[in-house]
Structures are given as structure tokens and as C-alpha cells.
Image (cartoon, rainbow, N blue to C red):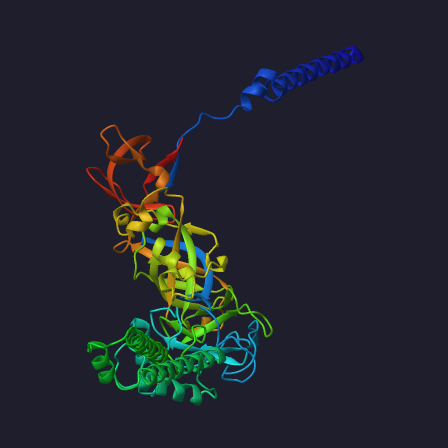
Amino acid sequence: MRLVRGSNRNKLGALVCTVVLVGAGGWFAGTHVKSPADVAAEHQAPDAGPVTVAVERRTLTATVVATGSLEFGSPQALSLAGSVGSGTTGSADGTAGETAEQRVTKAPTAGAKLKEGDVLMTVSGRPVLVLSGSVPMYRTIAPGTSGDDVTQLQQALRRLGFDPGSISGTFRQGTASAVTRWYKSKGYEAQQPSTADQQRLGELQQAVFAAQEALLTAKGGSGGTDADAEATSSSDDGTQTTEVQKLRLKAAQQGLDTANAALSAFQTTYGTRVPVGETLFLPKLPVRLDKVTVRAGDTPSGQIGTVTSSDLVVQAVVPGADATLLRQGMTVEVQAPDGKKAKGTVAALGDDAAQASTGDGEKGGEQGSDSGGDTSGSGSSSADSSDADSSGSGSETSGAGDPSAPVQLRIAVPDPGALAGQAGASVTVTIKVGASDGAVLAVPIAAIHTAADGKARVRVQRDGKTVDVPITVGLSAAGLVEVKPAGGRLAKGDQVVVGE
């Protein structure tokens, strides 16, 4: 009997355990095993909500940033206006020899500093000298020549200490003497009459002598003086021969007068002269010889080099939209790749800057414009600002047209300091175009929208709701905009909507 009871108890326990295990399995399956629909539902994105950013309080500074090239300013191409000397070989003063092609005998030296009165180069042994003046050298200046170019030469001679006498604008003996002394101080002889001129003078003198001889012969043939000839021609018994002699005498006198007039006219231009190719007038001196395009032995035709001022400038370009924020005189920070910095100022914008970079604004006649593209400021540019309040402050030549079109920018660097000696380097320029009045509320540009009434607003999330707050917009810089509430509440830390 005891054995049967124990067996029943064991069966009951096994049954209870089985029920418990089945229940636990059902609970586990119900809580951990999911249908495909449940799994797909769990992987769906939550409902989209607005993207917000906190309102900041900070000081804003708007800048225009560009890259450019650090260069010497006022580039100007040089070329000779004509022959140097008389164009002959032989003696140093060109008074003898044969006509020959001119050759550079001493080339200019790149990097040299040229001041008034200096010798730039020599051609066929003759000097090419530099003077200050705005009228280009376009002709040989010789005795009797008059004009503004002569006045300019006389003024330069006086500045150099070689007084030509009165500044009359006419080349006379005083000017010729001053030119002679100036050349001698440089180790050269002033240009004297060429062989052709000397031959021409001799021919004219011989013509005078021949005319005088003809007149004397005519007088001798008439048998007496002019008075006797007149008396003979007026007498009742005058002959046809006497009339012929009278005509011969008159013709001889006219021939002598003509010969004397030709000799006098030639003598007024005969003597010391300044050949057209021996002087370069430059608007401003001293200058720096930046580039040389001729060597010894070359023919000095076309461009012989380029001069610049000793001042450093930055040539750059900026988009038209940025140029509207700029104006002459703005302070600029110039930084080289090695971190060295200098201060500069905006010197020119648009066409003015483009002309200055090629020398078009300072032509000197024989000195043409420098068409080199090295000064184009081809570096990239970027702007950190678009201040609506200051958009009218730029140059009129910069603000019109396509806002993305490049605008030339020239920056003067009067005191290069640590940047001295870095001409040709690529630099970064930063121009401050505006700043907020101390710390202001600022939001991202994307937070601002315009409502139907045309007013600017921001949307603020507050207490689970989104409300519109009217604002006024101020300075823009680095992607942020200064805002002021206009009829609503806005404070630092408020969450403004920048996207959905």
C-alpha cells in the first residue's frame, strides 16, 4: 500500500512540473517572440520633428577674405621712341662712321633703382638716360625746337643742377650747354651733328659762296655798280644787252638771298641735340627696374623692360557681391603663407584697380602699358559677410552687374614690415567690413523666414509648441545674423527652428 501511494505522489509532482514549464514557455514566447509585422513596425522611423538650434549671444564681425599676389606697384613697360645717337658706327659721339643696325651694348639690370638723370642702358655705345616728366619723348630735341617736351627737358636739367637759363620751351644755346655738361657728368659726349649734317652744312655754305660769286660776276658783266646799271637801262640809247644784264644781276641777287636763307635755317637746328631714343621721360621717379627683356647684342626694338614703384601692393579679385561691401581706405590685414602679417588699405576697386595693375593710367608715350597677366590676382576669394545695411558703401564700379562676376581689388601696403622682400608671394587678405555693437542675439541664417506680411520672423519651440516671433535683422557674419525681437519674446538659449 505504501508503494502505491508513493508512486501517485511522484506522478502528481511530475504533472505539476510539466504545467509550470508549459506556462513559463508560453510567457517567454509571448514576451520575446515577435511576428514579422511587429519587427517591421519597430524599425520604422519616428515621426519627424523640427530641427532646432539655440539662440546665441555674441559679438559679430563681418569680413571679406580673398587671396592675391604681393607685388611692386605701378608697373609700366619701357620702350625706346627711336634711334639712339645718330645711328652710325665709329666715334662715340656719332660724328663719323657708317649707318648700322643698333645693338644693346650694356643691358639694363633687373632690380636696379633708377633716379632722375641715371643711365638705364647703352645702345651702340650711346647712353639712354632717365628723366622725370609726363610728356613722352617723341622727337629729337635740337637747336630751335620748341614745345612742352623742351620745357620739360629744361626743368629736369635745372633740377639736376645744370641750369639751362630761362625755361622758355625753346632749345637755345643755354639748353645745349646744359645738356653738354649733363652728358659729361655721366662720362659721355652730348650728341653733336652727324656726318650727314656736317655734309649738309658744307653744301649750304658752298651754295652761298657760289651765289656770291654769281652775283659778283653779274655785277662785273654789267660794267659798273647797281646804280650805273640803272642809269644805263634808263638812258635813251640803252640796248637790249643792258636789259639782259639787269635780269642776270637780279637773278644772282635772288639766288644769294635764297642760299643765305637756307643756310640760316639749317644753322638754327645745327649743334648739340638730344636724340629721340636717348631719353626716357617717366611720370614718377625713382622707380625700380622689375623686369628686363633685352640682353647685350639685342636690337632694342619693342619692349625693353618693366619698371615699378618701390611700394608693395596686393592684386586680388573678389566677387561683385563682396565688392559692394568695400570702399577705398578700409583697413586690410595681409598674411603670408609663413604667418607673417602686415597692415594695408584698400587703394582701388574695379576699373581703377585694373588700370593700375597694368600701368594704363601712367603711360609715358614711348612707355606702353604692361600687359602682363602676372598681376591679375588670380587667387580665389571668399566672403564671410553679406551685411544688408552696408551694401551701399562700396565703389560704384564694383556693385553693379552680376554679383558673382569678379572685381579687381588693389591693396596698398605702405609699411610691409615682415613682408618686405616677399614680392611675388601669394597672400591672404582679410578686410573687416562691419561689426556688431557689442554682444547681440544671433541665429543661423536658415532660421529666418519672411511671412506673408513681408516681415522677418523666427519660429521658436516653447512648451511643446512652435510660435512665430517677429524680428529685425542686423549684421550678418560667419553664417549668423544679428536679430532683435519686434513684438515678441526672444532670449539666449531659445530653440529656433532651422529645418523640419
